[in-house]
Length: 201
Length: 201
DNA sequence: CGCCATCCATACTGTTGCGTATGGTTGAAT
DNA sequence: ATTCAACCATACGCAACAGTATGGATGGCG
Image (cartoon, rainbow over all chains, first blue to last red; front, side, top):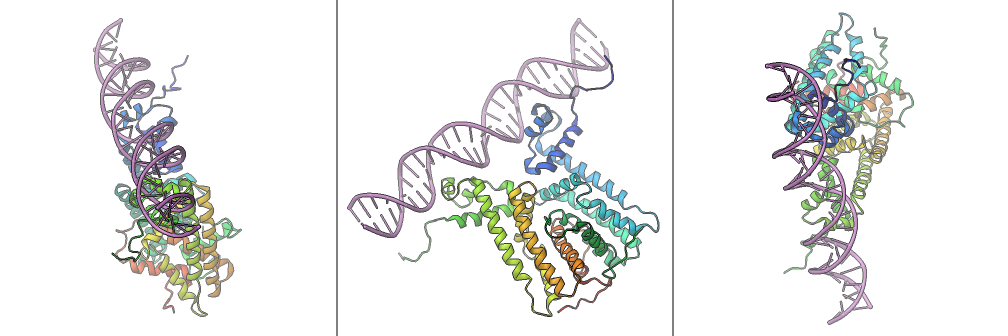
């Protein structure tokens, strides 16, 4: 009929496997990431898997490095700010990394961090990502005129909050979550007085 | 030789199993909590396990409820403060729940929360614990004279920070972690100006 | 002493999953 | 058209694990 690459005959490459595996990681965690389950999801058998990967560990390490590269690319992008826009950019970072924005991204993040608690390789990757993120965010605070020591404290608080809040279940605590999160953003970004006017931007 | 209860013949009861299971949960996570592994650790066979428990799920639910009860008992204890000591108590809570104080407790905490991301029963337990903790901590802030809305924000930030920071790997970021954590405690507890004098107590 | 309830060991079945071996299919180059 | 490399299916062995069935040991009590 046509020669357009409509369906490349389910020809899978390494990246397809990694992408699908990352989906499973987000949904089921590292322990639920089994090659036979993954193969079933891709509608092939594990004969295909062991063509593209040496073993399960090979896939896992590929997931890690790809995740790291994506996260580092993202943070340097998110922390670039035009002069004068640095404070607004901090608010933007908090907003972007808050759980609801990209639920999938946070699920991966949490799965990787849980993984890193028992796997040295994963821990090394997380360490790289954290260091890069902290340094990038710190630059932003410094550009806002925050003193060095305090810049370190605030960017650490920023990331700890972002990850921690996505671990909590607080449906019945406050009925105005939006305002709650806004207040917290103020505390992290620029709390000098309790009621900061953060009409940022 | 003697009739003292030196070795009760390895007679295990339900609580012994739950205690050992909680250890495994802390070390290996919910996915690594297998009944045969647990039995081996207790030097018995799973024949014993299935005497005390209906199935694996029975054990898991027992772990959850016991964890909840312990955590709720602990938080009401930690948030009791003599009049005038409320601010110091807030610092104490931050200190106590920071990862290094009781590494084991935090490992269990993180394991349960990761578990709760895929299990509704675990999620319900975490919701109970979170609500209790937030309300208790909120009372402390209110007793410090913090306005209601802000009290909600600060106690939420407190817990999110505590859990989040134990997920991060920041060895190479700052060489004075103690001071970093002190600064963050200030931001959470009483930041009105960036350099608050928190010579609390 | 003998009986019964408690507690555990042993021995099975069935399932899931990792990894390997080997053969089949497909498309592109010669 | 033949051939070869890339890609996948099938079929195997092996281990870990959930759960069941059943029998053995132990201790208190009538």
